[in-house]
Length: 267
Ligand code: ADP
Image (tube, rainbow, N blue to C red; front, top):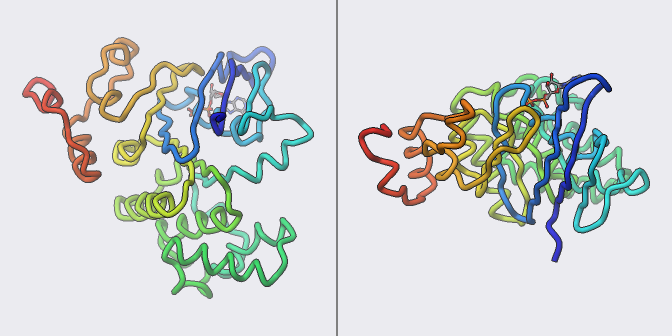
């Protein structure tokens, strides 16, 4: 069987003279994976997400979705498979009530009213926002707003959800809320999650962490491998030195932390 998403030697620059925002990136993602995308600002994470989602057409290379090459012709069908949640919860609302807001994307897709109501109800249950159906989105907390944004995406029944720093403007409580929501939805379905994040607690939920630097994919591995003082990353100035925090995050996930990560010199 094919990977769900496959990028083959993708290169992209926004303008001809610019340095490459993506420089020969190849990767595959399988259905049901949770992949975290980390790296410094400007390393190409958002550009990569937009490429996967078809918002950006690469300058070179190809993208395959379920083994099928992404083209101008199938772009819109493919895009329906992938939902995105963005950073700023306040920029994502179009409806005057929570319910209307979640319905908006379905209306756009011409989903019949009866099915729309079922899907809105289901999506709001999944994000545990059923009590808030008639609330004004602007009156919600940051975490609740992002949960509504997630419901709007979930209602469209995508195979893949991309969180583009979707928790970065939230307080710790809101962040945990959003991550737990995603985890729950993922546990109930075979949703693939791609999360762009600076938050180690969020990245620790991933099965695989991808590290971007200067438009290139420079490392990938389990959270344990990536966050444990990986020498290659340290040499690139990309060490992420918080094993103490990682340990807590992994324990939260009930992952056994290898003893070597807990030595004095690391902590
Ligand atoms: P990240 O998400 O890791 O912060 P981006 O993908 O946003 O990185 O940016 C990668 C590179 O592309 C950076 O050099 C950035 O300045 C450039 N870039 C991003 N968006 C645009 C744009 N709309 N026009 C021109 N250059 C851009």
